[in-house]
Amino acid sequence: MDENSNRKLQSGWYSPTRLHNSPVKYDFPGDRFIPNRSLMDLDQAHSLLTTPTQKPSKPKFKVEYRRKLENNLKLDVEGRPFQMLVFRGSPKSSRKSNRLIDEMRRSDEEILTHKPCRQFPKRESCILDAPNIVNDLYLNIMDWGKANFLAIALGSKLYMWNADNRKTELLSEVGNGDDYPTGVAWSEDAKTVAAGYRCSKIYLWDAETLKIVRCLTGHQNRVGSVAWNGQILTSVFIQVINSSALYSDNAIINHDVRARNSLTCCMEVHTNEVCGLKWLNTGNRLASGGNDNLIYIWDARKMVAMQYMYRLSDHCAAVKALAWCPYNYDVLASGGGTDDGSLKIWNIQKEQSSRLQWNKHHQEILSGHDFGYECQNQLCLWKYPSMCKIGGSMNHTSRVLHLSQSPDGLTVVFAGADETLRFWEVFGPSRDANSRISHLDSLLSLKTSPIR
Image 1 (cartoon, rainbow, N blue to C red):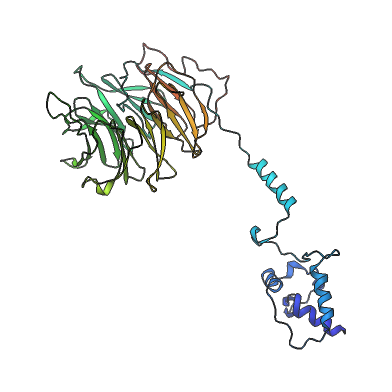
Image 2 (image 1 turned 45 degrees about the horizontal axis):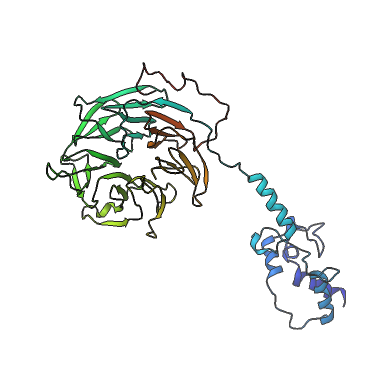
């Protein structure tokens, strides 16, 4: 084959033609095997190498020469397939992987991205006294607002504790000895505290002026729980039919706090006291749990018609603990009472213990427990969705009554029946086991403040 035929083969079959058509003259454009890639159109070159081309109608070279040329370009000396020209940039999945190189790369990635295992902290970060706290699991008397204020009821008094400067403000005190707060909740904008009382009234307090801005009536007995959804305040109460019997037709009431006549709808489906309420962050679903061992899921648009979405009946004790997953809005966690002792995860889309809090930073869930089971009086941290136990606190002398989470999602406080508030940095970095907590730092002075 003459030199002209070889030149045509080079420029028309395997080699991109951009260099030959360019008006610019280059001194070293590259040879036929290793072109100068800085002067090439790589997209066009890749297309020419990977797209089958039509065979010349009248080839001027022999078929045997063409076959040998293809073998030299596509096979190594031992006859195994290989590519002399490899253009990088294609997706990793489209390339034939080299097993050893890929394994080494994966090992390096695992070393670089390896994170230490999460551990439960050795001890509390802070302990405060909470005298006169009512030892009743069906109440909801503690809530941590977005402004970093903890609202808590101790007996007949309602306090606000500033987590930044650790100062305490007395919000209200009931003069009637039979009355006391039974349900406390911060509004979403952290400007208003709603407090439901045993004698059926709900007071709305301005957090800045510490004054009552409104009193909501219409209840017949104690308000067991309150929950905010924007400007809608949801509350539950026990209706007394007559003086000789307490019937189990409990109601869930929605109040629009902007309207003069605040009551917007009333749902009566639970057959015993409603002790748990939790709105989804998006505000379109409400979960209610009761002493009838049932959970109801409500669509906010259909609550006026008393139409619930789901009725969950797998618990065999009262359901107070309810928590929506912060990163999967179709997942609800619920905890049963003493006779149940179970923690259940529900997938609402598939219709599928105590007190619960989701971790906002990791896929974990924290449960606080009562007495009578393996996790007696403990906080337990679980990996979700495997539900493997990561760790737990030491056995406390009394049961966990209430749980609440700080606005940054790192600290959880639980109120115990031993009249203490214990703060755990369970969702944040683990503290040094040797760190000590002084009485001054934790404000353990019974003479200065009821909350320390």
